[in-house]
Amino acid sequence: MLKSLVPAGRGSVATSVALIGAILLFALYAANFSPGIFAITLLSGLLRAMLLFLVAAGLSLIFGLMDILNFAQGGYFMLGAYITFDIVHPDAGVIPFGGFISDPTLRFAFAIMVATLVGAALGYVLERGLLRPLYKRALFQLVLTFGVSIILLEVVKFLWGPSPYSWTVRLPIQEAQFRIFDTPFSTYRLFVIAMGLLLMAGVTVLLRRTRIGIIIRAGVQDPEMVSALGINVRAVFTLVFTLGCALAAFGGGVAVPFLGATNSLGSTFLLASIAVIVLGGLGSFEGTAVGSVVVGLGWAAMEQFSARPEIGTVLASMSPMLLLALVLLLRPKGLFGEDR
Image (cartoon, rainbow, N blue to C red):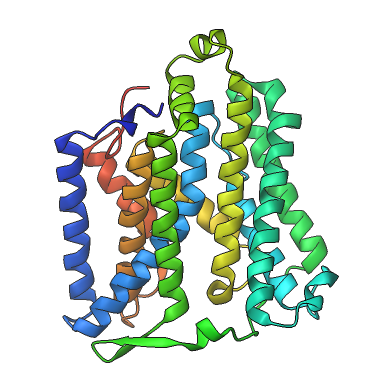
């Protein structure tokens, strides 16, 4: 479960450092040893890592506490992207009230808040209304969450159609850029990286330093004992599930300005996030954080390498699974995994 919330072993840390170091060397080679291109590849990898973390953290917390692999997690990411896009572009979609906010930055902040709340509400309904009767029936839970992911996809197609949407509203923070080794990088993307790091730190503090975090970890180790102390373990399950879905929807909201809104967002980030949590170690929050960085950096490095005409783009899309296979060959339980 989440036993790896305790400090990780030296072997796990050493393997993680060696793997990240190897990826950085490969990224430097992919950038033709150009400092500017290497720096942008590194920042792009961290950006991808933070987006993966927002999806994978929920997957890891839900699986670690409840033994549920939530296949609908990618659907919440996709839905958050579409809701945010729709509110910020009031003439392009089905949500009418975004147009009442004239300032695009305020409209964007409002849209992210709405997307996050919708993700949390749907997660709450899914856990309380559908999953709770199926506790301890893993196969039924798996089929149910997979079915919910299909429903979310079909709802998005019904409301917004199958065609992708490109972000057209220019936010001031999007227009701003900074230069590193004379190579430009979007200030907004840097903002997303910083926000992801803050959320990563915040969830870590929540799990390690707060009463609810202690209850979550105790519920993982011995739910019967926690219930005997008068604590409602099922309420904790609901809280964790709702938080995980909200994080995914929030991730979709902050990603849509540069990724656009497409039907494939959910499946792309779900598969990569599953690779992250298995690579990091099932149920390990620390492993999820490190795994997000490993996959994000590897993905960006492979994209840079695939930009060469003789290589093609197929390796970039395969990079999360290639990294997963490599790690499992070295550490079959993942970087921070334990016996379950």
